[in-house]
Image: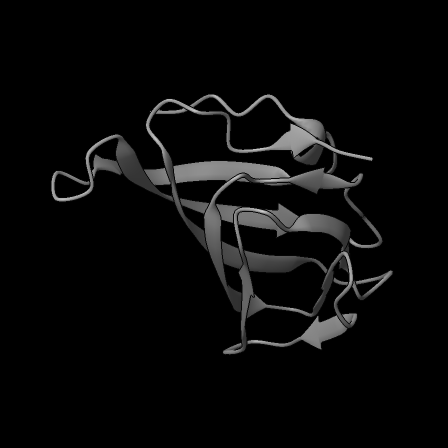
Amino acid sequence: MYTITSPVAQHAKVTPLLSKDLTNLPGKEGLVVTVEYPPGSSDPIHRHNAHAFVYVLEGSIVLQVRGGKETTLTPGQTFYEGPDDVHVVGRNASQTKPAKFIAFFVKDTGAPVVVPAN
């Protein structure tokens, strides 16, 4: 299992759920995590160097990649980030309620999940 030490981990609780080598995609792995944002929390600018698929479970989150539109997501809604995207906004939309989502990554095997960016 992964220990995630990243800028995201300082602001959110990240819990790894599953990691699996993708045998038909040599050098790639799938990783599923839950992310829990406390009320009012936000992430620093970062990237994933992966395909990232987000599914909101609870609360509302605001996400934006560089050059894209800021999007507020509620339970049942999804978001995608590509390997070249820089995640410029990631935050809980509420100052009073927590938010929780699942993120599924397809990334290089053993590569960090989160990389700081400018």
